Each structure stands twice: as structure tokens, then as C-alpha cells.
Length: 473
Image 1 (cartoon, rainbow, N blue to C red):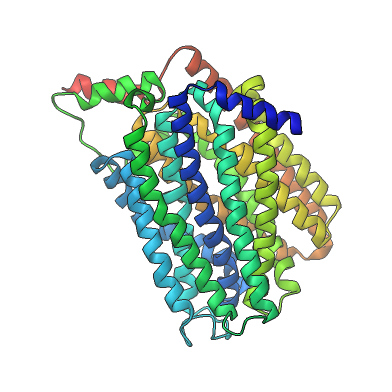
Image 2 (image 1 turned 60 degrees about the vertical axis):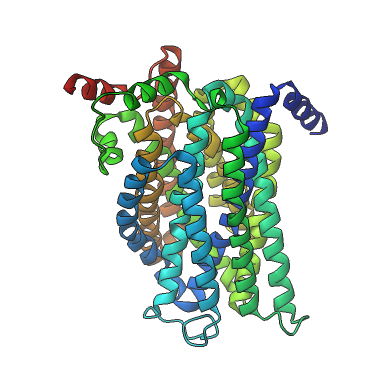
């Protein structure tokens, strides 16, 4: 592995200095975004368990899908009003401020976690979960939309591995801090570091990560030359032509959703997200059960979840260093897309025959690490040859509504599997995982083939929309 790391370091110095500057700022932005998200993502589960109850987790995932729809419409309006990097700044500030509000109410004697009477009528647990569910589509997704709009397919193959490594390091730092703080609070070493204070401190740390995002984003725009922010040149020229049109097309909040019906390519990207999120939800529910089993307080659950998160980011960091860039450069996007369901299927096959809590934790760590370090950059590169409406609006629907729809499907399976009982657990999970992996592989094969055709022919997915607008003028 040492030789691989040395090779990657040498590769960094082979990149043109100005492009290296762009990579540095994008990696730093991703470091901050994932660091903040790592903290809030796992807190939502432990807080909801303590305030509302584990049995309502499948239902909160279903309801959150509906709750995010108005937020997507608002986001679609913003895409047409402000610039790409300003979107990231806006949502970073919004979620940073919201973090502080929730940190305050966590310490409330009745509303917060001091009240240990878990009940579905306690709205704070629901609202906090809905808030965190919005982080991925409106912060992480916006970052990726920005990155995809300023990188070409060649740059993505060369640099996305480095960028993901930066994010994994951010996740490791955040998870390690949270793991350490919850460890201290559970040991009662410091009288003022109660389990309530620990949760509040962690949310403040998440806000500090987010507070740096606007600063780095502004420096990114000011320091990186404009010609390096074009991204996929064919898509850039198309967008430029659209902006110079005498009668610009009227923006629509439904544009992103309409792309699903018009372009199977967009539907294919949705499929890649849907299959992963469905399986991840099933595994995540089992993981929460294992974490809750030996816990005496919310802090104990949080500590276990952050331990798992740290290990997942560490494994992801190693994968991104030695595997992501090499596989994308040597095998190409099409083969890498097909490797995703095959590798995920191998983990699920192992888990079917090894059902201990220790095996479940290990499987979830590797499964999550592969998603962040390999699946995410490969899937995100699919947006490169698309128009702005797909990069931003369709992506928001996929990462918000589509992702939550997948989680709702996984949650419904969890409800069904529990009702079937332990006697039928093996065949139920076996058929479910086998069916998902087979469909996943089929979508990956067709999507990868289409992506290669588009790049080879210098096409732009969605270009027909621009032609229709021009003809109307």
C-alpha cells in the first residue's frame, strides 16, 4: 500500500498547478461538508431512538420523503436565481444556524433528551430527524453538483479519488471527535460533560465545520482561473449559448422531475441511488438494533454509532487512496459501475451466512466505506455530460425524494421482515438481497454503456431541451 500512496503523491505533482489549486479547494470543501454531515447523520438516529423510539424509525423515513418535497421546490427556484457556489454557501449557513437551534433545545428538560420518556408524540425527535434528512440533498448534493459542473470527465477520473480521500479524512476527524467526547461523557470523568452537553458540543462542532464552507467557497471562486471552471466543455458551451439567448427559457420548478420521464439516463442514475439506499436502510436498521442492545443511555448509542462511522471513514480513506483513482483510470466508468453491485452483493452474501452483531458491524462498515469512497464518485461522474437542470434540479429530486423513497421501501421491508419472524429470516433476506443486486447490476450495465457513448460522441444529455427552447424563440 505504501507504493500506491507514493504513486498518488507523485501524481499530484504531475497535475498542472492551477488545476491542483482547484482540486485543493474542492477537497477542502468536501472535507468540511462530510465532517459536518458525519456528526449530524448519526446523531439523528440516537436522538430519535431516545426521544421517539426505535419502532418508529421505518415510519419517520417514509414521512421525511413527503416533508422534503416543498424544500425541493424552493431549492429549484434558488438554482435559477443564484450562482452555483452561492447555493452551497446559502445551505451551509442555513444548516449551521439550525444546528445551533437544535443544540439549544436538546438541553431543554421537557423537549430535549433529559426527558427519557420515549413517545411518538414528542415532536422534537421527528423535527430533528427531518432536518438531518435534508442535509444530504441540500448540502452534500449541492457540493457534488458544483464539483460536477467544474470538472471534465478526464479530470474526474484523475482527481475524484483525491477529493474523496479529503472527505474521508474529514469524516474520520469528525467521527473521532464525537467518539472521544461521548466516551468521556459515558465514563463520567468530567462533571460538566454530561450526555446532554456532549450532544450539544458535537452539534456546535458541526456548525464550525459549516461556518468555514462559505469562506473556502469564496476563495475557490476568486483563486481558480475561470477557464478551469467550465467542466464538460460541450455542456458548458450549451449553457453559455442558453444564457446569451435573446429570449431565455422560462425556468420551471418541475424541470428536474420532468427529466425522469424524458431521459432514461436520468432514471438510471436514480436506480443506482435507489438500490444502494434500499439495502443501506435494511442494514442500518439492523445496525441500530445491535447498537441499542448493549446501551444504557442515548450517549452509549451515539458512541457506538460514531465508532462505526470512524471505522467506515477510515476504510473509505484507504479505498480512495489506493483504489478509486486507479480503478476509474484503468477500467473506466462503465466497468466500475458494474463492479459496484458485484462488490456490494459479496458483502450481503457474507452477511446472510454470518449473522452475529460483530459481523453486522463489519459488513456495515465496509458497505458504507465502499459507497462513499467508490460508489459515490463513480455515480457522481455520470452527471458530467448533462445540462444544468439535470446536474442541479434532477439531482436534488434524486438525492432528496428519490433517496427517501428508497429508504421508505427499505423501511417497509424491515417492517415486513420483523413480522415474518426469525424462522423465515434467512430465506426472506436472501431473496430480497439477490433480487436487488440483480436489478442493480442490470441498471449499472446499461447506464455505463450509455455514458461511454455520450462521451465518445461529445453529446450532452438534455441538449434537446435547449434546442426546443431555441426553436420556440
